Length: 326
Ligand code: SAM
Ligand code: SF4
Image (cartoon, rainbow, N blue to C red; front, top):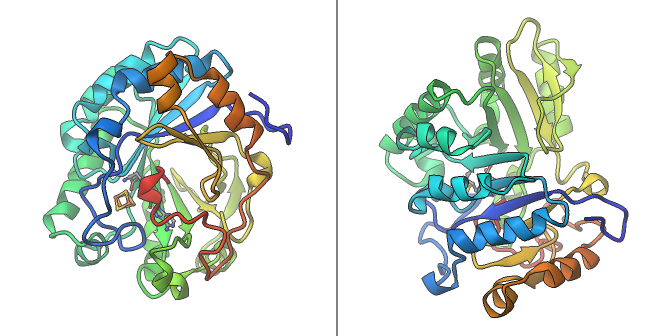
């Protein structure tokens, strides 16, 4: 699948639900959002059918995300269905790990290759404040991460959204973890959406945070782990893992974009922050085929996003990343 700017699109991020068991302040309002009606959710069979038809057009890798993908019932069943699509070379999952203890082994057995875990703080009380859930959710997350390692998910990628005055005093703690553990800790710039602008003074550019880390320790640039991501990686002396930065705002990487997003209600979204979407659910349910709709989406994929620091203009009216899978 080539778009009009010559980019090869072989990666699909699939949001399996817009619901979540946390309420991360930068992502979702505490009362939640108007959820997608059940009848509008793609079934697992429908998702697998979309993957299969897109695989025929060149899709090779998928990531399951959400909302929180593990709150949707029987997620390993979806993994098995996608595993059955021969051309798909890699299946990965993004999760907050709260429910991972109960699922890690089944996910591995069903065919998940890699896990990305979101963990923005190592401190229990901060976790509760950010996620707006009781302390035990932090404990569950830690147990979930341990279960993932036991199940053989290695190396883990740990995603940390950095917020000034909230968790930016933990950069060194996160970096220090990579000395003992083979984790790839990736610091992500906070992205503005319609609903989280109150956080805009918390934005920290990756250049600033790398400057702070360089001041603390020698960071050597290194090749990153395999994956689809746009991160830049560094290693502390003798560390087993790496630290990376993902810079959607300060240095966008749209020219290397390789992806599209499928929302839980079957819209193919061609840019995280854009308004361009093509409905796949209608054609799938009416004709059984999505290939024409996928071609239409590909032809309209925009060149880049127009997000700017401190304003949601350019966010395409997106109120939360949970609605499109981040
Ligand atoms: N619930 C899963 C999780 O948290 O990993 C998957 C969905 S979540 C929307 C995917 C990623 O988007 C997470 O790493 C989360 O931290 C990130 N995210 C959500 N809102 C964000 C924002 N405003 N800025 C930067 N990252 C954000
Ligand atoms: Fe849920 Fe993930 Fe959004 Fe946090 S970032 S509220 S865990 S969807």
